Length: 433
Image (tube, rainbow, N blue to C red; front, side, top):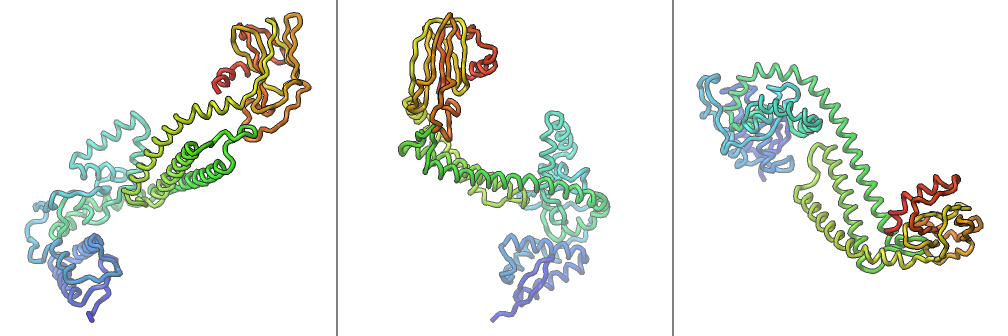
């Protein structure tokens, strides 16, 4: 049985074996004597980061090999130099690794531009000028800055500042940074209160956006389920006739549409949760898989839709019924009754077609021509109202089409002129159904 100790390292609780505790305690004492208490505290924060990167949590025990790893990363007290801190250069990290932080030591607003400059190792003036120039070409630059402000963490510790500059995070570098930090620290403290207030406002705004995305995503998801179930059970009806889906291919098209809607809802929910939590909520490979399925389903659905469109259109037209009435050329139109939809179409002959979707008796619609006036009387026409979901010709499901060589020049009764003009504007779209 091994003896263990419970300690706090960098404000984190850890369980440490007895031998590892002794080694770690002596190491931190040596750092405190050589470099000071503030450096030792910074070293503890860095140790907590390194242990977390090794997957050591409160449920695991810190062993001798873990302490040896920490000492190897941070250096031993005998390695610390006594050179002039102001003149000495900071040690470079292996491979010049850098991490992106907001640089509050040199911040003008939130340290985004300064942090980007440190990350890309360019002049901060160049980054700030770039933001200003892009602002003149679109307001999205301001939004981008706010998003970066929200997503990029602040370089809050000396360890963060060293990683931001691509420097090695060892005790020697931490000691130098601590001793240099007086002047930039004053700037940081002066802007910290304002920054917190602005950040709180921005987080509230992003919280509203995130909540809205989640709500919309949930609504789309529930709507997709309701539409899918209704489509499978009842189908899309025109009148009392099921128009879609018919057959396995149309059911597959319905499944593709449902899948696309669910994926869109999922992406909205994921995006909203990511904004609310200020970090990713799912692994990148999961998002990539969702995008891949979306693209594949969209492609399959497009192919099925193009293939099924003529079939659906022909099925629709096969359910139309037309009563054809031949009339003599006329000079004026006179409509009596408004229970049907009137449409005029150009043609080589003069005729009246009474179209219905489904078998409806239209003999009550009287068509007569006298003294050059064509009268269509539907005042005594009372159709069977069997159209509940989609009514292609209105509530009565009846359309009267007047064909004449010059339909646009036919004068109309003043009482029906406004309604007829509306019919004429919509006629072209209806002819392609």
